[in-house]
Length: 515
Image 1: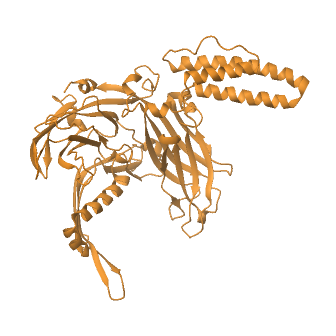
Image 2: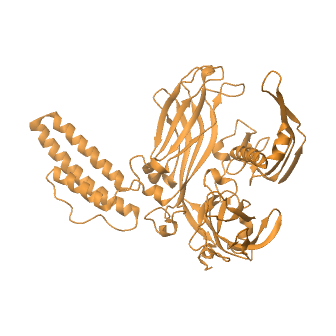
Image 3: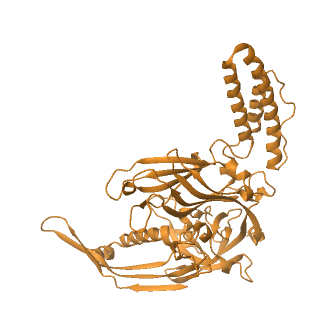
């Protein structure tokens, strides 16, 4: 549904600088234009027939603010002030009302369940600026300039989860070509728009890059006949055609419960690049139960952390306080977080072959065992690799157990403790030999209480709970839906975590077309 709203809000504010100096400023009207989607789901058998309504904008809407007072004179003299304000407004709206974010309004609390309301992404789209043509020599004060062009590509309002992709700069080239340069984005709706901006890079820091034009195209239009995933579009500058063209191509992938796109999986070579995604982790936080603090003090939220190190991602739910109609001790958070996964993220724990062999040899030598004469299997199947290391570790653990039992009889319980420590070490080796290991790809949930609505100080961290990557790999369809204790004070958290791989669908061949 296309929405055009012209609101005569006439908001005026007054700032008192000194007793005699006062400044008035405000917004006279707000204009908003964009495509809004409304989802009525899930259906029920009783009135009002639907359990909830979800709504939001498919792409960032166009916003026009008509300022008044001192703000009007300021923006007329300094245009960058208006653009900065619009950027803040756009960012705030995108965080709540632009895909992948939606507002949810329950219609029947008796049947409402956010897990039934949640709509997963369509999949993943791989975008590439193939080439450009029509660029001309730019005339400047001292000499002519052959443009040094580069493109900035983004999808919808997903900048918070996946920053815009910048191609390399093609220097002194009127027909630039970007070979083997693409980027993957999570796709939430086929009507999301691909935005491409083209710049002329300037080599001096005091001279900003020149803007050469832009265009936008819906993903749906990219795959319509006769485009078949590749399309040439003319750039626009200040609302006018420029005569310059950029060819953009796209490949579409569906999400799959099969993890062949993960490192060492069948076909994983298509997902190994720097800007390529091999899967998606979905974290849904629905509600908590039995918050162990007084109701009037409760102002809780959930902190979700994925992984460690350079790939760490942190998210926060909204804060639920004591308010009429809300249960602060059994708060409903109803939020979803999507974590795009790359091969580098999933490999960050993986020990090298030499490290694994050294660890196995050291463990065997410690108990008089022999060093394995053959390395772990090199087969691409993760299950085969895990089984190989598991077999070696089981053998070592058996040897360790027998030695420890023998030594314990003669030397006492202290050596039993030492044996348990070594057993724990070999268990850690098994984890490292599988695809993920010590907390580097685990998901940590933290229940936190902030300052209450009545002004009471917050209680801080109330508890933590971890879902390991190993659990997800072993889980049926790589999905865990549970209510677990969080902390040791009686609180519980309901959640769902989904691990998805990518499955090639259509138009991938268009990415391989030469310039």
